[in-house]
Length: 77
Image (cartoon, rainbow, N blue to C red; front, top):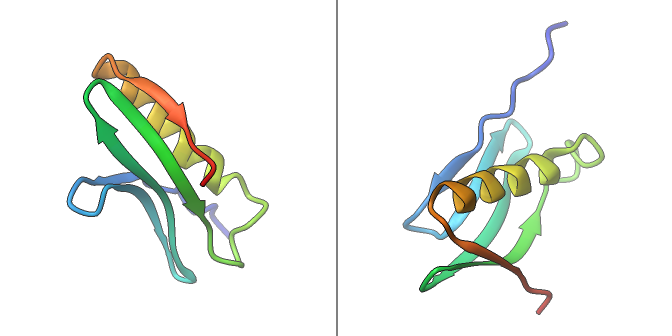
């Protein structure tokens, strides 16, 4: 069976990066504060947990921040 390719989308209206799976939507929520990208929360549905989905979301956020000269601020509320 072919491996599923995770496509990360940046939903700027909801302020989150997301990957849509049959099991649900994995998200990395963020807030833009000037030249900062504040990473607020990561949530992954039960089924794809342990398959690097959260890491893919973070990698997309880092790449996006780098391309827009933003500083990443991790936040654990």
